[in-house]
Amino acid sequence: MASLDWHISGAGLYKRDLIEKIGYFDFNMYADEFSVRLFMLNAKSVSFNRGIFFYNTANPNAIARKMKPELFSKLYKEVKLLNVVHENFDSQVFIKRYIKVIQMFFDYKSTLRREFFTDNDRKFIWNQMIEARIEMKKGKSYFPNLTFQPKILVKVLLFNLSGNKLFKILFLK
Image 1 (cartoon, rainbow, N blue to C red):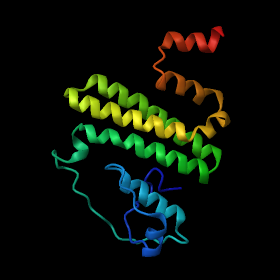
Image 2 (image 1 turned 30 degrees about the vertical axis):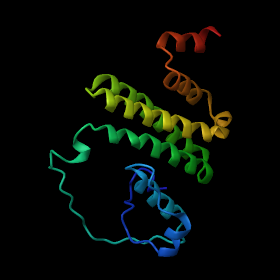
Image 3 (image 1 turned 45 degrees about the horizontal axis):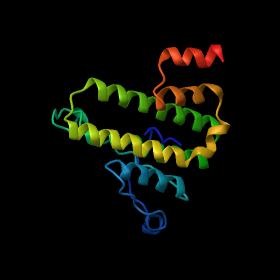
Image 4 (image 1 turned 180 degrees about the horizontal axis):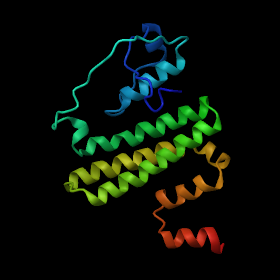
């Protein structure tokens, strides 16, 4: 569970039979994160090294420092991970992850409006968001199990409802 939010790193050594059993995903630039989490979830045991690792985070040209269209592909990975969480964790963990994914949809749409991107970049980004939404629909079996608040978040963020429409849904119907 601690790997879901990277409280523990997924960097490590894994047995070959585990990798062959699970497979290594390559659906986008974040597929390795998804793969590692599945490895950890399916491992019989996990051990830790007390070594200290130092990462150079001062590179202004690092991929994580610049807004690039490829970064939007993280949303798809998070939705795939949400489906795994739904199958393997309790509802509290799932709801927490679910709200995070919904917030990512909102944040990405806001970023898309706010940042400068070329038309081709916008198309790529929009396609990434659509693919994530399609993947989320595959896991629709968990929608009925959600509390009222996440259902409203879904309507607001996925169906572009304004604050005014949200008010009507909550208080006038």
